[in-house]
Image (cartoon, rainbow, N blue to C red; front, top):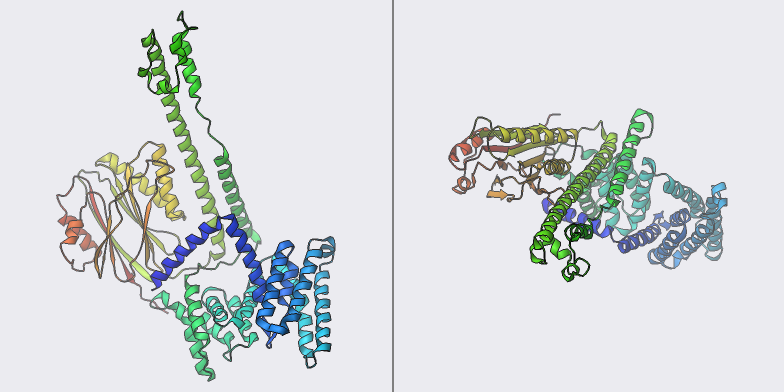
Length: 627
């Protein structure tokens, strides 16, 4: 179920990224986002009464954003609060007028407290009006709203200008308070914060639910217990999404309260929070670390801008007409009837590509010049294609370096964090060469974080030349992956180098990226032989034959297969000379250690093929966790 959920989320992420490129969809999403913000903020309630939080958000906006937010808030006050929400609709209208009149004016910039003071005055005027016409209204509620209106206006304006960690935490609490009246959505937000967010953000989300008073269960205590509970070393890390529900049941048992309404939302929110990418806190721009992060980000931006500028530079076109005119002048310059020659007028670019189809009084001379012009055209096209490949490779490297430096800058805040490895990798390889120098190169090395890489690089052919090519490509890949390059960027860099050196098909690449914290494996192949996965359901063939790297810089790409080894599966990587498909189809293989299994498979495939043969066996075992 979790695997299918992760696949659905990944497909949804691709669809969202594709849709985000459409300008109409992006504009519609912005309108829906601002209108929805006002709509949901109108539902925020303290002591069962609505508050002017939406007006504070409206006054922090300008232009059409303020208008759309005000419309959403007006509709929300009417939908959630009925006739009593007329006061909220008046707040939304007043906030929109203030934003449109003073949002970009000099008075608001010179006097930052002007708009908050006007929101307080508006709240006081509407509150006194409703106190006069509606007897029984609470005076304490009047002063509470009078306090919240200017504070919310100040906060949202600060949040628009500077989005630091504390601001994001408070925004999360306000968002949970707004979703509390929507039942499952509010509890789902609490579940997400419990599994995914930092401790202050999670506590503020629980406090928002408690302030809304939608349940007798103390949600702040539930969130606190769930946040600390997710630090427990579970046998399977995927079980963390159950923590919010378990914490809620435990708190209800201790308090003697039974309210099943929060449980579905907490469980669904915990599941969503588990699949969200880990949250990173921004580094304070102080000291040497802040300077280093700023420089990395600026360098990444410069490289990205350089890439865009290079893409905008067009390559010059080949002037085929000039080549044809030059051939005509050379061949017909000494002809006595060149001015009255009818055949000369029939010469066109098609004869430049097929000179033998043109005939005149001196065919040997004009056809010879056309042949030389055609050879010159072919040389120019080859040179232009070479320039295009050089530019594509250079642009590609600028993009790779830009992404790498940006990721390196984003990882600086987590430089002290250590991911827990729940699995230990057992890998063993056996190789047999047709000559003394083996062209197959198998490397196993640690990457960044909990990543481990197993690389099988097969130099095409046999002998010393294949061994040198395999070793050179394998060592370069190892250096890039150890430094933190993404696997797809490292593989495409090798492809560009081989293409520019004219060594298409010199090597094949088979790379397995193993995540020791989750047991997931990403298998990258570029021209390599298929691999095999041995599991409880039998043998599965992974990958298909593809062209080797180095054929083209722009069009050729690697293939990627996602699989899991967390249930004791065995992954077998083989080179072209080891044909083990028929051996695995014979029957069930007895469970053997990776070294013995690789040696047995290599022995059984003896005599098949004339190439170097290598078999690498990978298996994950669960680590014993200690206190």
